[in-house]
View 1 (tube, rainbow, N blue to C red):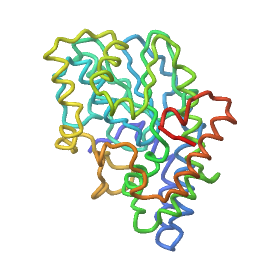
View 2: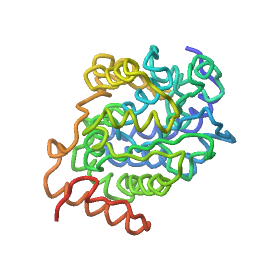
View 3: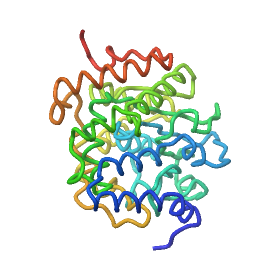
View 4: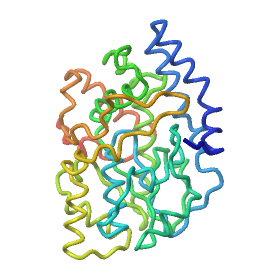
Length: 319
């Protein structure tokens, strides 16, 4: 496999954290080392470097989500819309750049291939960066999906735990501590990410929706994305996009969305990318008390930032 100069730069940046993670797990410090690694990957300083000096243009469609918040679902939806429902690929990251990824072999922003092959002249870009670390241009398009942090917690435990090889070394309670505390405080990062893109929602080139909205009415979600992208679809094209962005279709084609390997790390085994695609079922992993704690923590974090995101309304919480 050919590794680009940018991939090598990622390797130089993340190798110390990966080595510490492996050593920590070996000596029984899975939680502590996982926290250090996640904090290293998610720092604003590292996020700010991801796009370099890239300047977005009118053919760019950014899908900007927090980790495990319907990212691949929206990537598939937007990419299929850009191709009128006829997009074909071996892997999503053969056609969708992800500049902030700690994985190798992802198509770079500079590759003109996806744009040349796009019948609408649009190409999709993935990022988990917070809003202030995503390059902005009023001619580009931006889509953000906001998911209940309790659900993101459950999904991230299974997914990131599998990617990092820590599921057998970090308990749910320990993952809960990582989500709720300052090292790396994933709950606070969720709030920062949510507040940033929610603050963009009134811009005409930005679409913000919740995971619950997508789940409740996939047809409307597709229509809203197509409208933002300025793409007119025939009934047949719309139906094809609806089919290809469905949970059943993506589950059957899961190999097209599973993560590439991290730098200097063996490819992940038994990692499920398309797990359930459901909302409102965080109780499968965490207690009522833990769910309430996450709600209180994230709601308070949003208030401290000064965000008016309607937390309880968005996630159907009654108090």
